[in-house]
Image (cartoon, rainbow, N blue to C red; front, side):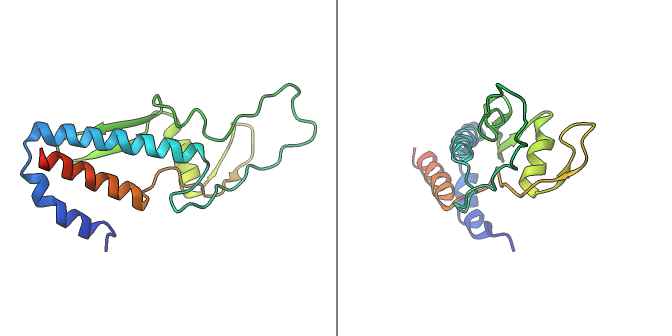
Length: 149
C-alpha cells in the first residue's frame, strides 16, 4: 500500500473543487516549495530521514595540485538542473538533462563509470529526492490555503 494513500484520499475531494487555473497555480507553488526544501536538504548533505550522506571516497595522496574541492552535488541542486513544474493534476520536482542519470545512480546506489576509461564503481546510496514529514505538512497547508481562499 502506498504510504501517501490516506493523505491523497482526504485531499482529493477538496482539490477537485478548485478551478483548473487554481489547481495549476497551487501545483506550481507546491513544486517550487518542495524544490527549495530539497535543495536545502541536499546542501546539508542529509537524506530525507535525517541521516547524513555516505562520505566521498578518499582521493589518492598524489592528486592534482591546486584542485579546489567542492561539496557534493553543488551544481546538481541548482535551478538549472533541478526543475519544478506544476500542472492541473501533478506537481513535479525532477532532475533534467544529462544529470538525471547521475542523480539516479546516487539515489539508488547503482554502479556507474565516472569516465569512459574508468572501471565501474559502486556508488553508495545517497537519497537526493524524497519526502519528509515536514514536506507533507507544508503541502497540506498549501492546499488548505488555496481551498480557503
